[in-house]
Length: 305
Image: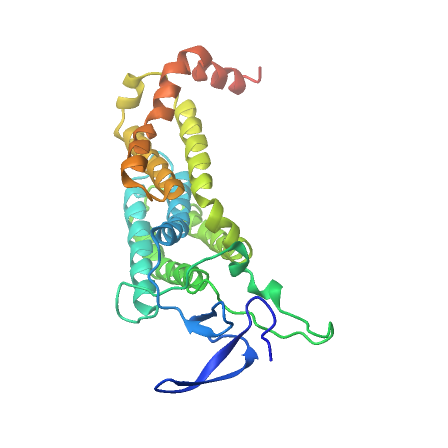
């Protein structure tokens, strides 16, 4: 009997030497996906560079949001922001390590995966066949194992570690904040983690193909907004404070991450020179700031003109 559906396959029941006995056509077990002959095969490949970059992007999202809300709610007078930033980095780093350790193979900082072939691999639930247009054969499984579920596991560990560590730290060192403001960055995380989870559940496949461009666009926009809001109009304004340099270098790292993700460094000698474009947006802003005068625009906006 032919195996219908794009993701239905026959599972290996018995193997003795060259003799292999397969079951009926159906859903493949976790950690396997169908091959061209409609047999379920274990995922034994190593993730490609692009796969690791995608996982890195999904791991960065909660960290960047943590840092944003910590900075947003800490205020200028608070000295606790730095400690909270370090704690958030520690939480996400430990969560990433633990996630790799509990993934197959267990106990090593390595995962085995199935290669992503097309967008539909992320949405196998949409491709369950109905041979007689009445009965549906359910063949939904993780064809991109483990790129889909490992993100949820990581977010769960991030949330648990945050709830264990951050409240104690904030209560101890956030003396410059009022009682109602101390935990606002934690409350914000309780909102954005469910949002990130739904985003991965619904748009994981789209994010997989679009994340390099999302990184480039958002990093360019946020850099321009930050430099204009900080009234940076020349190199001297940029060098006045260490914080501004840290923000600039952070955005340069994001620019480089996006460029590497787009090029995938398939041809090293051709792709690496593209990294020379990383400082270009900041230099372009500094050279053109005198024509737009961000400080004048901000002052007029504040005065309601």
